[in-house]
Length: 338
Image (cartoon, rainbow, N blue to C red; front, side):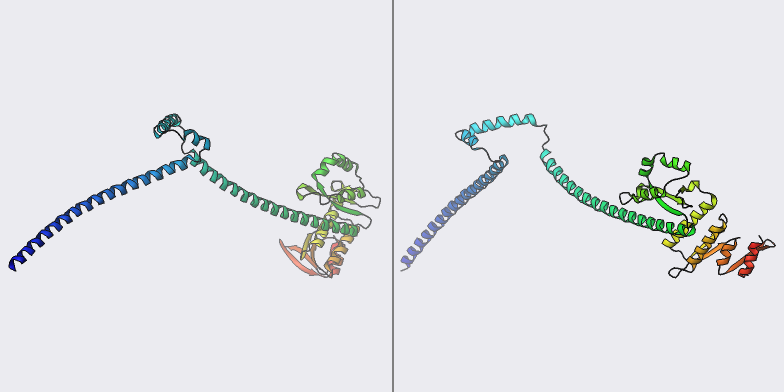
């Protein structure tokens, strides 16, 4: 029995040695397989990379015509490489060409589009500003024309009140009037007469067709007699000019009233008839129901004293001015003694 156990142990050791040998052989075979597998994977990776590179080159070439493909379909790889080398050699002749031209073109094209969009925005903004300026200019023109028409209307009314037999008118002069009239107006001034009706028609013809920028000034034309003779400011005497100036002041006062007015001897150059007319108008304006106005005047004439509500005398004593309240009778006696 002991001998049989020894034989069994010997056989087991031999079998174990054979298994170890087989295991070593298997390990070597497995290592060889892993080595081959790694080589195949590396080769596959290289082929995939090469394939992607070729695909990228094909994409860079773009789509080729079918005729070109058919022409080179039967060429060998060696022949194709030779032709490629020849083409590359010819391309070296154009090495001085700016290779960034395409990128620059794309960049500049984008900048151009951005600038064009900005230009459109600025053009729209400019149009809006021009429209606003046009609207403001139109409102300004309308306000000036409206004010002039109001003052002109009141001037005619005031002058008619001061000179019942006369007529007066304000005329807006434009550059077109100077060009059209030429020397006719100067000739009319030298002769001293003109037609007020013709002047009225000339003034009424200046409608909305003229802009305020075309206006050069205001001309006054008045007539002091019912005969219809019209005089310009340069043809008037000192008293007549003073009367026209007062008519202008009262016309503005009716158009845009002020709380009070201060006049210094406004009736000095006027004769008694016009002094009385001015005094009566001041009295009406001062006692007007809708817009009464205070008038403070200095005078040495009795016409204004008669319509005054309060009178004050000013005297000079010891180089000092003194103000004294006077009755209307004392004030009339004072001016009568002058």
